[in-house]
Amino acid sequence: MDNCIFCKIVKGEIPCYKVYEDKDVLAFLDISQTTVGHTLVIPKEHFDNLLFCPRDLLEKVMHVAQSIAQAQVSSLGAKGVNVLINTNEVAGQTVMHFHVHVIPRYSNEDALRLEFLSNKIDKLNLPAIAENISNKL
Ligand code: 5GP
Ligand code: ZN
Image: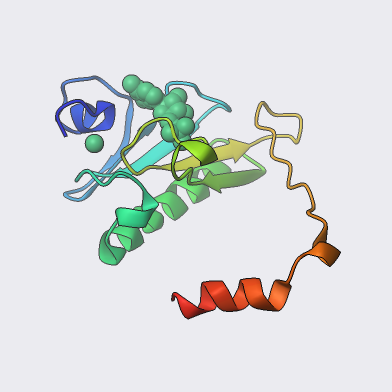
């Protein structure tokens, strides 16, 4: 895609600090470095987000993400890792080229704040919700 920042990185038109590259996948440091070593893993081909990435390519992207997470623990001294995929604007996606954040964690006081707030579960029809999702798979 012509106006996509990550496609420009793939083509070498915008510089990046490369962590890994093969014919299908590229990984590079996120410019924001939420924690030290924060890395993005992308398919070289443009897909807007997770929902559109073909499964075989997704598998390759996730393999690289796993290897990077392992290296962040073994080489950077991370004590844990968050692997995040933001999908669409409502979920915080700002760059519309599918990417996986691999964010090493050194302490729970790190710059990343993740909080899963509980819904009012007694007001939800959980069997119907599960069935709705299940029926679409
Ligand atoms: P999103 O919010 O879409 O999940 O994440 C997009 C990420 O891309 C952000 O964390 C942002 O810092 C990173 N980013 C945006 N522009 C660039 C860039 O030009 N180079 C690099 N390396 N990262 C970028
Ligand atoms: Zn792109």
